[in-house]
Image (cartoon, rainbow, N blue to C red; front, side, top):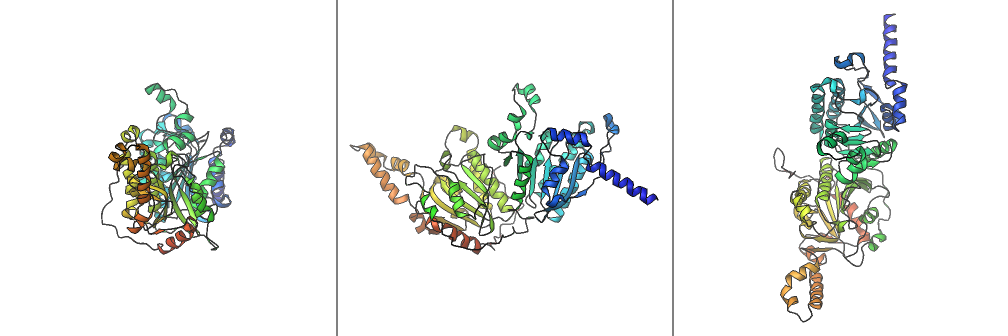
Length: 515
């Protein structure tokens, strides 16, 4: 009889926990256009099947009325399940319970699931929806955040860590997502800021809304804090499931190869993309789409630093990372934002053994006081460092311009690229023909009877000598000049032969990237 009563009590507690705090709180969440924590987990995991850990945990503090408010789970649901057949650990904060606020028991549950993910080499996804630290528990709440930050750092580069912001994320709560590999937000309901609008108004007298201060579009376009912006929660969860398909379980496991049947790999449309004039722009995504497997390009940081395009894709079923200059925006120059965007993506791919494809059309670094005063030197060095440090297979295709120091930075042979190809339209030089002619032939131009005509003649002379890939190829800086239509075939073969690449790096604790 005692066992029966115990079982009934347990079932009652589980039912109470699974209700997420009652029908009124569930309705409140739906009224805000948001899913409940459990609904989010059901969407994430295959067939909605999720094994929960710590379902009956409650907070232990009794201060400031907490003794009268005890909720099973303490505002966070933790556990594991399968996503597309792969084991994944996850936690989902429940805003309907004490505002999803983090304190001792809440933090311990998250730390427990993070420890399990790291010990077993399994990706972890955090579904964040929290009002921040639980004020009633004081410094214990702050310690809980620090415990999580420490684990984020230990797991970095070992297992993929993904964060979806599905509600408010303020104060110390923002730093755990910032330490993870990828962040996604939902338009109109997700917010991230260190200090909210009220504090900002008090301290700086700026009147700003939550959306403008830390909404999805703000962080997707201006700050780059979030890598993805979604219209609603189901889209966000589906997007992250797709992201996972390009990633390995951990740093020691390879990314699964998809089945691929080789067909005619010639892509004649690539021959028609580069404009006849080097002054005209084109969309580098057209090049990407022509090279990679059909419908496989998954762009990252799409709305941030649009002069650089990065994302995951597949070539012959193999997951790769793509980094490309975008001539449609700022002519594809490297600036502060683009350099940081590229560097971070390169380092992620290198950490998880994802080969890199670089598509280069770069006229140089963006000049100006704004760039110099905001650290273009150190930010450009971040990208240079990231490529130089990377040990994964690295292949570059120069489609058009490769000028100045930017040529070196964009995965040149000189900093360890494995294979470098160039299209016939490639221009590899210290600078553009017009500027170079003006400097080299300054006296001849100024002393000429027709300076403008002489300038044009000297520009053509310089272009004939350097505005092509053959000088670089003769020095071995470019392995082969190829027809654009043959690019995909070359890349399939190159990535295949580089599959087992191994580099013995110097023994050291770690390098000192110019942060």
